Image 1 (tube, helix red, strand yellow):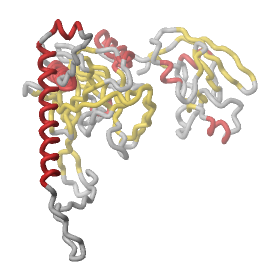
Image 2 (cartoon, helix red, strand yellow):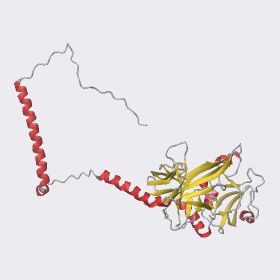
Image 3 (cartoon, one colour):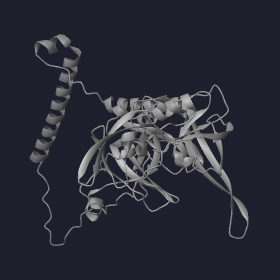
Image 4 (cartoon, one colour):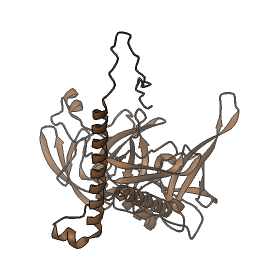
Length: 402
């Protein structure tokens, strides 16, 4: 809300005091002198103005006198604004035809046995002209729901969840269509803080293909998202002040070239204009995997673990303050080391601490699951293990996450 400043106004009238002496009338000489000065000022001003006009029309005289034109570009700011507005409009026109709205529906039975339909909305964008659509995993995570995809041209299709990323908030759905418009993927590694970006999506689940404008506020952010009965850590996120509302999840974050540089995924609920997007470069491997195999293929070691923080290390008397502690966790029926998995075959044991992968240290900002995103199933890696007071190196071949 704008601040309002109280300003007192005067009507310009001055009260006369009975005790104030009356002013004497001015003499004729004084009046004559005043008129003369006023006429002299007017004539001098006109003469100076005429001289400027003369100089401006006589280029040779200006050059002999060494005078230069003063170029005041009053249209510069206006031109800049028009260019930026044009770029936003062009980028929006380029991307919007490939942005879709995703409607989720499922039947819910209440305490009294009454059945009603629950609906929620999200966003996605088309990555192949035969109907592959990238979105957030949390938009299509309900296996009991039916998904309807609405394209920008007003058509609707049944959406089939094709793949979900076990490591990231990404999913791919498929619709039965051909000849669809597709987005152009950009390079999120080249983003600069302060750069203009747009968020496009199904705002509030009802305002399809809404466009909001902002800047890249920061890069490489880490957050913990919360959902119904679950939470997830996301890394290397783009922070933006482009408005991301409920229903925008899964929509594209776009640069002014009309290239997708991120996937809008979360907002800070206790703040204004703090949204987060997954960099598109983090999704490219998942996209290629789906195109080739029909699923998102990610590698696995075959252990359950907890990321060690300095607080956790201090509270439990650990000998190191970083790494991944191989740990059974709350569910005692789930082993710390998966039987027959890569880690089991390589000799990893419960309560081992994995300190690094191929000499890349595991820590709070660089957890094990983030490091594994750089590898593929079948790759051989070397783990540096802390076991009691000793350290040892173990080689293993990565398996495939089911």
